[in-house]
Image (cartoon, rainbow, N blue to C red):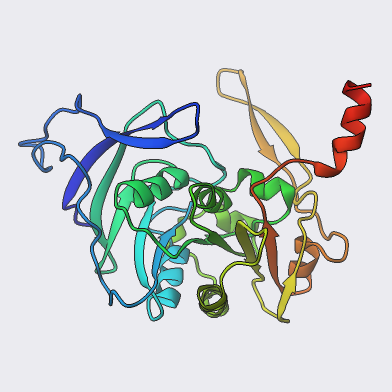
Length: 312
């Protein structure tokens, strides 16, 4: 991995929700340390790998810039779009939509698989924000994934960094698609994502087809994010689904360290199935689950009950 530049940013958010990026002038220079001298005033313009006539896609993930899933998505999209990879430098699974507002974000130009990319020392949301506001990519769509492991149910989309990046993009005004691939062994989620042994061939075909459709026809109304989950073995076609309530049976395992002090692991097995029409059930059948997601979390149907409770 060859780094061509390193910069530092501070992400600021105001009460109005507007996000700005400013340079951290307190960062020391790096002369004599194998890094570029100083910190530049902005990230260099995005490196263009492809024809400017193609639609532009910002590609990110939460498994990190070295993930095999990210580069499988790149391979699927490169023939149809001008793809710029802006992804976390390290594994960031389960960070949701957390954002770095108490520390500077370091971003560097690098090459992976001989392809120009941007490595971001922060969360998936940070990568999206830098891509949109510092690189000024102005993409037609943001794609997040391919995540190693399914992101199904209320439970997962609230914690998933993959879906979190997609939600952030849509909240900033660019619609997005999140892709996740089911794993046969849940332990695979915790292995080195560079060497995931599962085939991505079916997933790559789905990524390309879904993105071609969206780029050609646009997003359906009232849809901010399209959450796509691909079974490990595809046995059927697309199924339009709703979110199941849970994916795991949550548990906590208590252990003792060598000094006798307790520590804890959050764990729990997968829920075997869910009701018809849910994303969990579709994946269990071997169908590709496509779930429309909206940013508006308002429980509109609760309005009358809330009025009875608080206004009468």
